[in-house]
Amino acid sequence: MVLSLQLGSLIAPAYACGCGAMVVDRNSTVSVDRETSVVDWDGTTEQIVMQLTVRGNAPDAAWIMPVPHRATVKLGDASLFSDLRALTAPVTETRHYFWPREKDWPFGGSGHGSGDGAAAPSAGAPVQVVGRERLGPFDVARLAATDPAALENWLSENGFELPDRLAGALRPYVEQKWEYVAVRLAPQESGGALRGTLDPLRLKFASDRLVYPMRLSKLATTAQSLGLYVLADHRMEPRGTIGGLPPEVTYADRFDPAEEAYPALEAMTGGKPVFVTAIDQSFPRPSQIDGDHELRATAADTPYRTVRYRDELLTVGPMPAWVLSLLGVVAVAAAVLLLTARARRRRPVLPPPPVTVPPPLVR
Image (cartoon, rainbow, N blue to C red; front, side):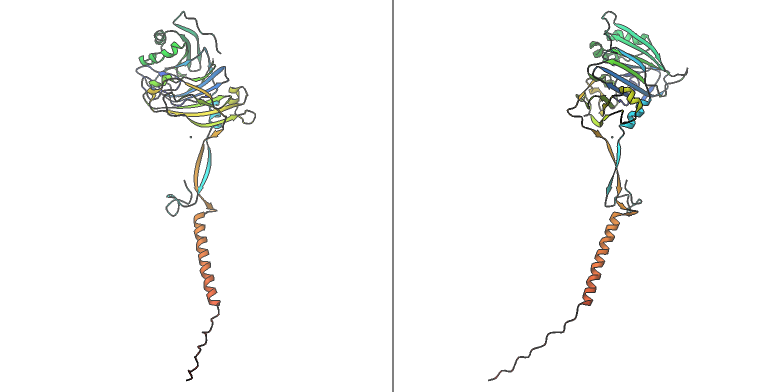
């Protein structure tokens, strides 16, 4: 399962997403505060459910998603994301410390201390429209292209205006014969603007490897953050950093629907036990991104969960333990002094030894 955070416009860049590109009219602005993507992979089929939270004054926008094979597109279940957040949430544990710190008494404070696959299109037409649907607020076009220039022209003629550098970034996908999902985002009400959390979209396509498209994010001009929730048979890890900092695992454990009640997640997996791996990665320099994420099984399915510690001053009831300890030391010292004084008073006073006078000398 894959969760991708912080995407945005490539025309007026603020953020970029880890799996595609967002474009708007030159006279409009839109920023995507959050993109959440959930990916399920069973070894032959990959599913991606994505949800966008947007704001701005754009009446519509376009979002491009490359996929390795023919994809079907449907509306997804928003409760899936709630299930994932609850399942992988960090746990909080309390750590106690003995001596008072800056915010504790007597320094201050109160005594407590303060991570369907289908065949590829024929090589005839440079752009082939394999499907187009209206799904909630989305106008979805599913495309296959053999020429990046033709793809750019088709998108432009159909209201999907792309900047030049995005057209160039699509070329590697065209050369690998990937297909594309072009999504026009529009508000439900006429004359409105794109704002808030949109309905999730669900993509499904054939794939013999777990791949997460990241190449288009190299167009971003600000640092990027990617969160991946990987749902597969084993604990998963990226094969490389693809130009970012080393990925960090924040959660890894097996999920069994028979033991934990997460209905939307159970529906996503078909009721089968799976291993969930959550990975965070930062890209301080997006221009260094050099490929797509490929994920593989780790050597062992070692569980892991992020723990957040809450430090508290050790107390005994309402009293800090260090105060009781000092009082105990004082009490022991006082008792020792008292016992010593009593022992001295009770000790008998011995008379001085008799003075012995030597006998006189006899001549």
